[in-house]
Image 1 (spheres, helix red, strand yellow):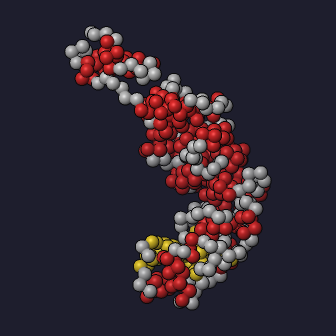
Image 2 (image 1 turned 30 degrees about the horizontal axis):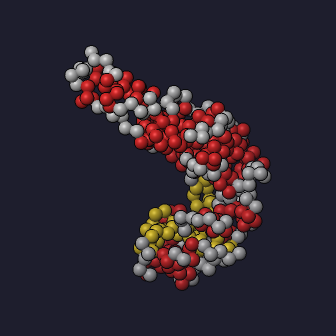
Image 3 (image 1 turned 90 degrees about the vertical axis):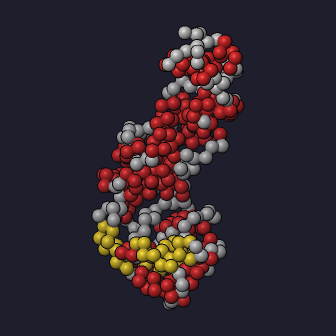
Length: 387
């Protein structure tokens, strides 16, 4: 297969590949960029693999006038800066020792060694500068069949890095064939070794869960995680029960996937800590979860928290009840988002004192919301009861 991948038209990538090939070494694009190009999809990163040792990569780059940064030289990675952009160049490697989180590697000049240490066959695809695909492990056939398959024996790959359990479900959600289901051997290995997830940092687990939740439809993969007992290890108390309904409603409403909305549908305990959410993410998640059972309507939610929050809450409520979204939902959200409460505290001075001003404002606010935001300043003030 010949691919017209982005590396063929990216000036910096072309230059980085040429520097290595002119030095007499193999220079191949590898991984997600090749995988996505074969699927006709875009990819942001262009990663390069080579049989040149990292010190030689730096020598060749500097001789060509490129900046070379030893970003992970102990693992064989050097970042070359070409045309104002960084490109990670990693020497072919083989694992010598692993502990489930990190590996001790030895450099190699064989592409077969490098391919054998990768996670899934669809990620062990290489391409030269002209777009010719090099496929040491049959990953192209797996990719075209939308079959997510571990390289070699699944248990061995997982023991090298337990994050691969979560990556397996994430890749299935993004690239797998939902009708064929998950590979039985991979699923059994993931369930058997799930305890290893406890070794992983919350940052790594959280990053994988975000990517999984942002897949077009993560419900089948997360459902398999739940059945295998893996979801409970990550988010105790979480359930996939309403996630599939939510995804369907999102599609009907034309809403893009959003991780915190979908995490709110899953539920579970201590998500901010277990997934190391940012303060903003944790705040949004808490607001969504509280609002699902709240009494505020769509218009009031939009007025208080904005249109996006109101829409997310209504999606979550509908998913929880197994209902469709109201036909006039967008009109109600737009009305609430555009509304402005017409009374200010200064308007009540002389009628109320101290805390009484706040109490009166809240009463007027409730009347104003109940009127559908129709009451104006004069009507609200006329209906106020002076102290």
